[in-house]
Length: 372
Ligand SMILES: Cc1cc2nc3c(=O)[nH]c(=O)nc-3n(C[C@H](O)[C@H](O)[C@H](O)COP(=O)(O)O)c2cc1C
Image 1 (cartoon, protein in one colour):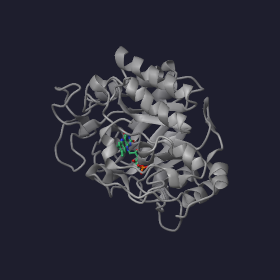
Image 2: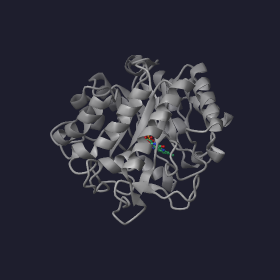
Image 3: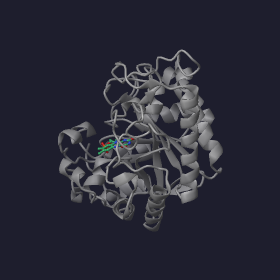
Image 4: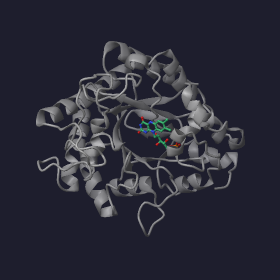
C-alpha cells in the first residue's frame, strides 16, 4: 500500500454521495465506535463536540457509536448512550445539530446486544439476557430464548428509535446487524437453533432482521435511508461466517433488500482481504454486486493492524491508501468507514483529502481513555 497524490485522493474520495434524502459531501464515513462516555446513558456536550470535531475535520458521514433501543435487555452498560428517554434524546438532538453545523451528515447506530449482555449489569440490572436460543456465542446456556412477544417488542422498539431519529433531525439510521449482537445472533446458525419461523435455513434466520427493517421503513418517511451493518465475524467467534459462498450471501441479502435496506455497511477487519475464492472482491464488493445496493467498506484503512489489537493496548502503524483508492476507482464499494484512524486524528479526512497522510496523528490505544 503506497501513498498517493492529493489529486488522486481528492478525485476519488471527494465525490458526494447521496441516498434518499441523505447527502454526504464526500465518501469518508466515521465508523461506529462505542466509547462509554455517556454517564447514565445520556450523551453530553463532550460527546456532541467529539463528533462535531470529526465533521469539522472533513468527515462526510458520521455513524455514531452503538446506542441502545428501548428494551430492558438491550444494553449492558450505563456509560453507553441510550436512544430513548427525554434526557438521552435531548443529548442526541445536540449531537445531530452539532454535526450538521460542522457540515457533516450523521446517523445513529441502533443496537440491542442480545445474549452478550452481562447478567446483572446496568442499565437494567435485573433484565435477563435474551437471544434466539438461550445460548451464548460459544454455545453455552445463557439467558433465555425470545418469545414471540419479545420479538414483537424488540421490533417495535427498533421502529420507535428510527422514528425518533428522524424527528430529532438525523439523516438516517444504521441497524447494528453485525459482530454477534442480537440481530446477528438470529442470522448466524451458531447462535440460532430455533425451530420456528425465525430459525432454520438462511432465509428463515434472516426473518427477524427483515421484520425489523420493514418496521423501521414503515416508521419513517421516504426521505430517510436505512443502513444495515453486517459482518461475517462475531465477537467470541472470529472465524465464523454467515455465508460461505456468494450464493449464500445472496440468500441472506435478498430478504433484507426487499424489506427496505438502502445501504449495506460490510464490516471486515482488513478491507483488502478477498471474501470468497476466485475473486479479489472484499465483502463490501460482493454485497454491492449481489444486492445492487451501495455499500461501505471498513477495516484497517490506512493502518497495518486490525482493531482487536486496540483492546489489548496495541497501536498499529499508519500506511497509505493506494489500494483503497484503486478499489473505489473500480466502483467496488461506495464509501469507506474509518474507525481508529479518526480516534487518532479528528482531521484524518481533511488530511487524507489533501494528500497529507504523513501529517496524520496516529491512533494510540491510550487514546481510548479520553474523548478528545
Ligand atoms: C473502540 C471501538 C469501539 C467499537 N464499537 C463499535 C460499535 O459500537 N459498533 C460497531 O458496529 N462497531 C464497533 N467497532 C468496530 C468499528 O466500527 C470498526 O469496524 C473497526 O474499528 C475497524 O475499523 P478500523 O480498522 O478503521 O478501526 C468498534 C471499534 C473500536 C476500536
